[in-house]
Length: 311
Image 1 (cartoon, helix red, strand yellow):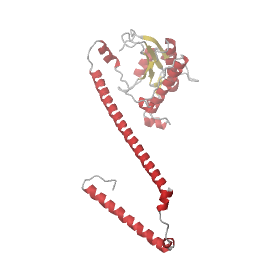
Image 2 (cartoon, rainbow, N blue to C red; image 1 turned 90 degrees about the horizontal axis):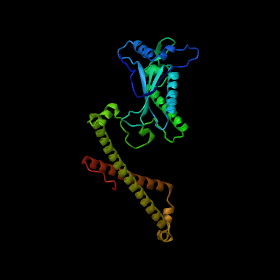
Image 3 (cartoon, helix red, strand yellow; image 1 turned 45 degrees about the vertical axis):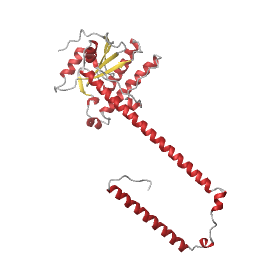
Image 4 (cartoon, rainbow, N blue to C red; image 1 turned 60 degrees about the vertical axis):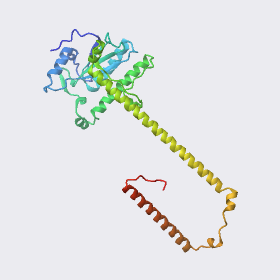
């Protein structure tokens, strides 16, 4: 038995029901006590899920009416999408915490709301195999789509409020932002810190952040080394291209052409058989040299020696 009648810090609480054509109104579900007692009693398994919770942060740039409208829009979409009852509560920031921490808890039934009771499980509660039979994507894809929809509604509300702030449901990695994400301490750890007490959770988070910071520095150093190596290769390519350009210019200069002897009459009167014989002789010579180099490199590997790429 739980009694929430004295729960504090709640600015607004409301229940929204799905609107379906031809379906009778489920007025009974507007009673919070009746709704959640029904959600508990309809389940038979002791480990059954009786509700699904969405906890959302509300922009402090919005006023109370705008925050309520935002949560109500999202709750209405959940009710219509899954045909469930949606019970949401908007909480004000804790008096000893961050005064920007406006947030809402949104509870939905896991079963379809009918005229006088709760019906079948909604598709969002099904496993991926059963969802595939209905032509639906995975549960993870469903959650990602809901997160994206919340971001769209939030940004639309911020735009209407003429605020430049925006939210993004994607991870920092997916956004291409190279920084360590912050860690949520939770109310218990935060309360201990307010009282000046130590926290093992905080120490663990700080240790993980130190490890991540060290890894980020190592990655940055590695990227810097790769950048330097790439610059070195680029300079080497430029040097080679410059050397080739100089060599070609020297070859084509009038002085160099004057040093090259005119072809002999004999060389110009080679028969086709002689040309083929000369080409075969040169090809065999090149093949023997290639095989010799391969054998030399194999010997180096057998001795554990490094390759001499200049050979």
